[in-house]
Length: 474
Image (cartoon, rainbow, N blue to C red; front, side):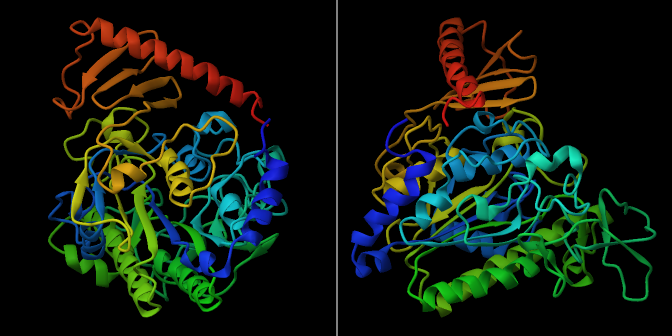
């Protein structure tokens, strides 16, 4: 193992940081990574949807750079989240699916690297990279003996503080659900807000903010607002202490169950109940993104704050969520399952009002941010690549193909083509994504040489992934 192994990276970088001047630290950009949950590519105005009301997302997207081809690293949530903070395919750390595996302490994470550079770090919202308690039943796995090895909280991975749940919660009044449902509602899909005089039950999960410490107060109302109520004081404190900050804000919206109040469903009153709930919760979330932006303005740190926005995978099945022209949805490696809405803005350094066609993926966050900060990559396989040159108007194509693995499904994507199998490599299909966005025409018989080349590349990459999965990088 080279210089930057798990045991030495923090010490070495803290020494380097101590040698940097205070002014250099102050000049470091603040970094906010926002990720929504199950938001389809077409579930935002900036991608052309005229039904959903998302004025704040649209405004920020217009100020920044919109990615036309941005991918979640997997077709479901937990694996994608692992890629965000490691720059690596989630199979390398054996997180193949939701509610499986956990973030390993042997991984070198973005918050660890930035903390060593003098950043204050915090995580808010959904975690889904491990359980948050060993002592009581919580969410999907917390407190159950068979899942004790999956205990893995944010402060074990470079975060100074956190306020999060293990997995999903209702998107309004996140700790409860009603005892009965009206037409169009259900415990799985969602419901209109539970009124104070209605009977209600515990949803069975908690927000946690420390080791075996759960939050007991101020947990009523819109879930994204509850999250943002904790984010804003963190940012305010960092700015007033002259500390650069890094935060991941992972909303539960619009993951089921979608719950919305009358204020937000009223925007969609002519539509059916399911659309009212689904669209209403996205609009409520959008308002909180606007609230965040306004706070940055009040603190005069908008210009030197990097904001990335994306979803963790495509839209859930049987919902009004939409992938637009793209094929299939969540849990699929066709474009609709992994191509997601995304933009980046950094007013001080990146000119806005642009769209990029270069393929990008959540694994690119770490190498891009380290490139911006002129920091070396960890000494281990990194699947992402820096997008910095593309963001400032240089690079026009991607030098590194993107590999996907989800269950029996495999795919390998380059600038133009996608090689995909839904049966673990028994059969493959090939699509020209530049001329066939909807993946309607399999051209593998027409382009056998391209398919053969991509298969070899994929198989070589898989050797590296399997080596990592067996612990070879630690």
